[in-house]
Length: 103
Image 1: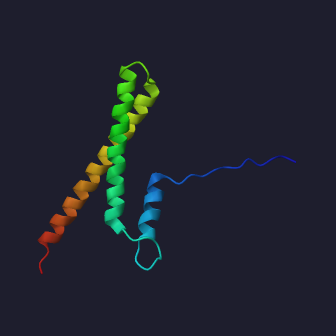
Image 2 (image 1 turned 45 degrees about the vertical axis):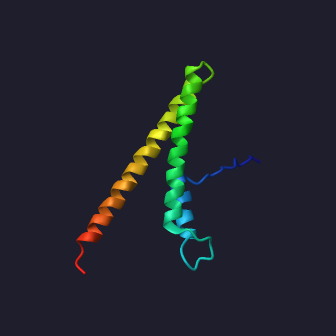
């Protein structure tokens, strides 16, 4: 008999975010917090990614870091910042659309 390899599937960050938002729907029995709490967690994650990139870069400058770790941390921070900027732009656009609506 041949052994069948097991595959471990990890949810992506997007899937985890969707799960958090879905669990915050009223009446689902999940913790309260909603969209604001999810947005706050995402922004805190972007700030944390920036701090990690700074720390990793400083360690590399002092001769204690690994170049691969620096590049990875900086790329993650850049992606987090681009994502936060895109979300901000969408929120501002939605607000402007709402303000244009006739009552």
